[in-house]
Image 1 (cartoon, rainbow, N blue to C red):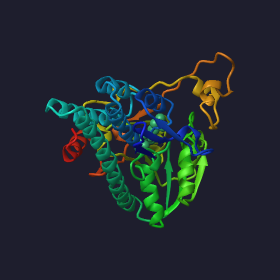
Image 2: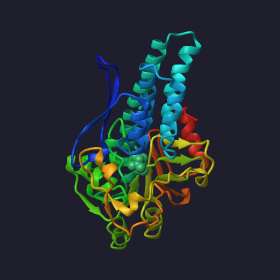
Image 3: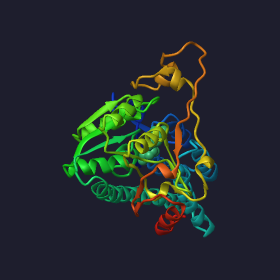
Image 4: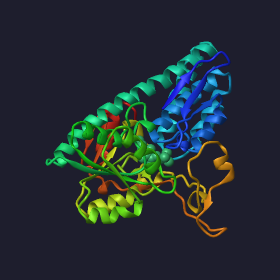
Length: 360
Ligand code: MRU
């Protein structure tokens, strides 16, 4: 969903502009860090694992183009606060750069080390995605021995957010390929519609049986007994196992508990953050109110952001627009990582997974 491009006029990071999907598949060429920061803020590039990869390539871009790498790393790291992968990816590339300079290496060698770190993160994420899909499919087999799963997902966690096929979506896709996916229920995911615009797009591309629902239809869907498991991704998992993910995930966890349905979180170990002790210490991004008070349909051109959308509320209406919410570990049936499955979700288990992945 992104690629590094070498060109005579200098390198660029080329992104699929996710703000335009599904209407248009257009690429966005970032040739400097401010352009990439803007792409991150506007969600042209988004989703925790891909933010980490993009951040690392952003540092490589700054180094290759001769910008101040430390300053660029700071700008990238602060572009969005919740997904821990972003800062982690940025730091991996910046550390690689710094190490070469500290060892007396040239600026070119340092730039090449930063690029190498970004490429390694990209490759490792694709591998993690494959392993999560396999562990997740095995877990579904244990939790739901009857097969023929009806899975509910929220936001977007497929190939659009990953070096591979994604996190939670990759598990649903593996179930589909195994002939065991009866239906993928796709929450539309207000206000920016990552479910309707992106997950439905990916499900259709993969020929999966899916149905879109308004977020507030989830309750009656559970009540009708139509959901066998919830599978979602994560932006940050704290040391106690609390899971920050797209706003609307926590209500699904509450519904799942009430209806005795497993609530499964699928995330690479790069999303585990043992330096954040508890869920209430996770910084939750607050986004502009106009994302709630207006509807901006995806359409070609950067003028969408400039012009604003169709007003849905009276002029001057205030809005509450957190981008994420936090689900306490007690509501999470299992966390699936590339290192294996953690269930029940405990602080000790999170620490062990981190140690196993050597990314503490
Ligand atoms: O605001 P977004 O679209 O970047 O939010 C993305 C999500 O919440 C995803 O569910 C999360 O990053 C996990 S995807 C692997």
